[in-house]
Every structure is written in C-alpha cells, then in structure tokens.
Length: 253
Image 1: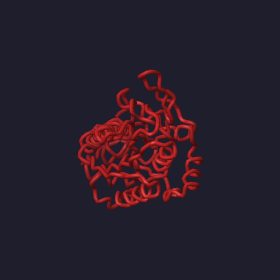
Image 2: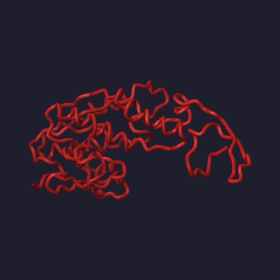
Image 3: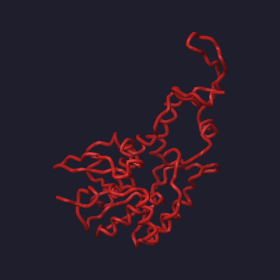
Image 4: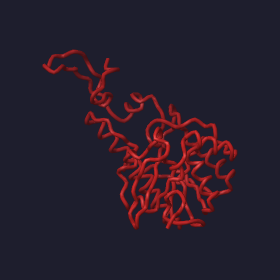
C-alpha cells in the first residue's frame, strides 16, 4: 500500500504529531492536515527546571504550539513526561559524564521518549500512526520499516534515530523526508504559520541551550586533578573529568 510520508495507514487515519513549537514539527502537522489525515498535536513537557538560564523556555514553546494548533484548526494536548525523561535519559546522561565519557542524549531520548512513552501514549489515545519533524525517511516492505536518508542531507537526522526498533518504527512517519529545510520554511511562510521565522532550537534534547559547565555542575561534583602526558608527567590541572571529552584539543586550561 502506497501511503504518504512513509506512514503505515492512509488518510483519514488519526495521526498524533509531536509538536515542539518549532517550524519543522509545524510543517509536519501542516502537510498531514493537507493530505487529509485526522491530526492531533501533542507537546511533551519533559523538563521541570525553572529554565533560569535556558534558551528553550517551555512556556514560550507551549504558546507557540497552541498558536500552531489554532492556525491549523487541530486539537492539541500538553503531556508531562518529566519523570520518564529524568529516569530513562537524564540519569544515563549524568552517569556517562561521571565516567569521563561524552554521551549523545538525543539517541536515547528518541528511543525512550519520542518513540517510547510518546508513542505508547499516542496509541493509547486511539492514534493509528505517529509523526515527528525529523529529517529522515522510511521505506516499508511488508511489516518491515527501513530507515533512509532524507532529501536534505545537511539536515539528515537518521543517526539520532538509528537505535529505534521495528516496533517503534511501525506506526511512524516522517513528513519532511522529501523537503529541504529551506523548502520547509518556505512552505511555513506560504501557509502563514506563526513560527515560520522562528530560529532552530539547539542544545540538549528537551533541555535546550545552556552554559554547559554551569549546568552540569548543578548535578555533578567536580574533582580537580593533574593532567598527565603519555609518560605520566603532570602538564597542568583539570577541573573535573565530566567537563572534558576524549580527543579534546581546545579549552583544556
């Protein structure tokens, strides 16, 4: 069966879209609505910090999500997965830094949250499929789903999705697969989406862009020590292993 966007079901099936308040997820919802799907937006609030020095305040994102939903005339829900995020993603993130390793939380976040508890919640709400604003593509052969690169290779996010299981990919679709970022923004502007000119988010998954050392110091205690060369000679001091990464060449002082 040939269905839009790699989804497992044709219109007018109910599709739950993960809305972040950004342009990518907004265009995702727009394309699904135009294709004839019954679209429900869902915003995941996964961080309970006061966001005092964050660049991604949840209140602003929720307001943008509500504006997107109103513009597209789709219902929207706000769901709190903060406990699941801390237990399944952030705890591992901190544990890796304690060991002197640099994790990629986006991979675990996608597997455990966006395609884990989000997927389960969406299906429990009666959804027949889910969609996100990732730049990736799916090819379905029988019951198998194959993750493929999108049209925009500069925005390719398949690396961050590579740990997903077949069960997690089964209800999924990626409506941005055939678009470049520039085309997506142009589509958002043409449709009058209120976030068409909003800048892209950066930083840790669901936490946002922050002064990283300051943020990490709130959760990990620093244990300064000597920096040694290959012969064991002290060549300087470090402020604690969590603040460095393997292969780092700059910012060691």
